Length: 368
Image 1 (cartoon, rainbow, N blue to C red):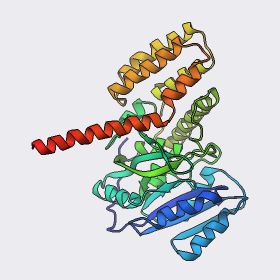
Image 2 (cartoon, helix red, strand yellow; image 1 turned 90 degrees about the vertical axis):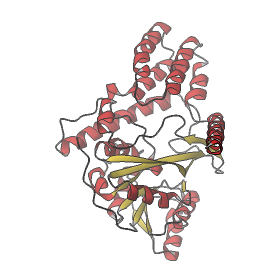
Image 3 (cartoon, helix red, strand yellow; image 1 turned 90 degrees about the horizontal axis):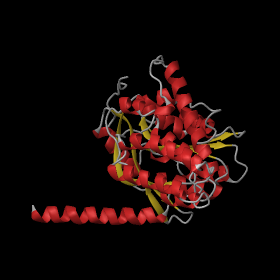
Image 4 (cartoon, rainbow, N blue to C red; image 1 turned 135 degrees about the horizontal axis):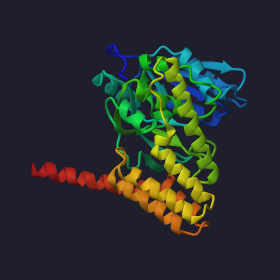
């Protein structure tokens, strides 16, 4: 594997923001406004409405009449997120592609910082950034990522060795060059009626260098109906995640074969996160402690030698899963949700950590 060749970006590249929408009339206007109010103005907003039965199209049309940068694509039937995103991409013209969920918003500097990042890293076809999970009133819940650090550069070999795993980010934090998008689209529509971003963030680091921005540039709204909608882990949510991981690996392997690189495949059994989720599911299913202990013993050396997790994450993982095995089966769902799901406790810990880092930086500056 080697990264694709990328031409030099123009001085003011057009940025296409793709929005797949279905029945989010109450949110879509705020999403569009967050793009139109960017500090970087050379943008187009392509809203692909996936057969909404509410007033979504009327809301989008109001913005399109006021600003020629907004374009609405009406799809008569609901085909799912991949189909809607494919339609939006086909109508786009930008040298840079950004995604935006119709119930979320960009921060004002998002597009400007993305353009700067890709201009100053000309070999990177993909950039990601931090996001903030917020509630329906846009009050912060937790910053993502929580502990894992971003990766930079050509990481394909590492991603392959990890079975497709890297410090990826959800769709709203994915921004990529059009040359890279040409290998992604069309996204397989049957497998990705939901979470089409999984195909993108699994395939792209195998094709291009990646770079990352440490700023929070996206607010991901939690309102109970989206993929992060549950504040708790359950057997059902973990089962769905395992199924999703398997689907995205299989779809990417198929795309790699279509590209003529069939000698490169992702093996999901090498994916540590997949192994962790399988242990979580066994904990939810009240598996006998003997079998849980064997799974934990097999996971431990892989966790300790992992090249992506930081030491604090490794120790936390061992503590979380080890404690869950000891706990009564009735308490395991509460413990795993508290430790592994997003929550405001983690936000407070992040704030304390960031404050401590800023204090240390200030002291170093003063001493220098």
